[in-house]
Image (cartoon, rainbow, N blue to C red; front, side, top):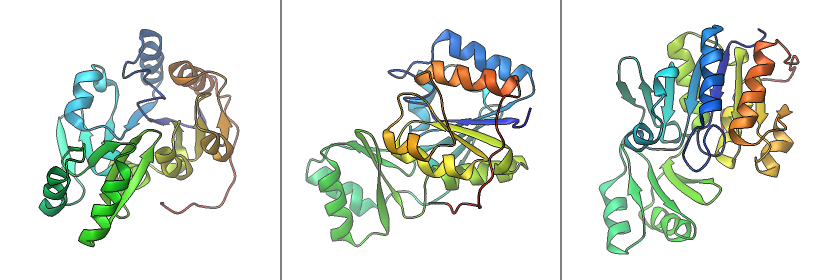
Length: 232
């Protein structure tokens, strides 16, 4: 195989409405059996992910909270990559009744609560950013994203991004797809993701991942030549 590592988003890519179907799980198992290393890259919090994805054991490494936390399913080791949200941010969100959830680092909400979230970050003078995943919204320390989390995960595994195929569907996937040697969009991906992907699958969500795995196993992946891309 030209690429031996598959890095995949969860919601909207592997999963539909939070569930990975049996066919997609079987394809992941085939990839593992063929010697392919699997890495998940998701915006979800770990506790939530553990409840919706019973087959995390298939993944060598999981990048959680949109790049803020690493999790190794085999050892259950968690590595937090940055400081937790400031108490002032959480307190102000609560006082102003802005709908939100707090993880180890991430502060998550949905549209239209992104506007008051961003306003509070500005008022407090925090070096934090607001990141979008379709209707989902996340706040994280500046410079923390799926690409930075994946880069650290790959470093820990001793592998290079050039040997990785990344697949996703939304805005927050762009950085990590561009980090990988080959960036792939599933058919249901946003237009901006399709435009910047190296390949676009015909199948949506899990069907697109299955299609990609079959191409990887058949060594039907084109060489991608481009300049190294920055983490953003």
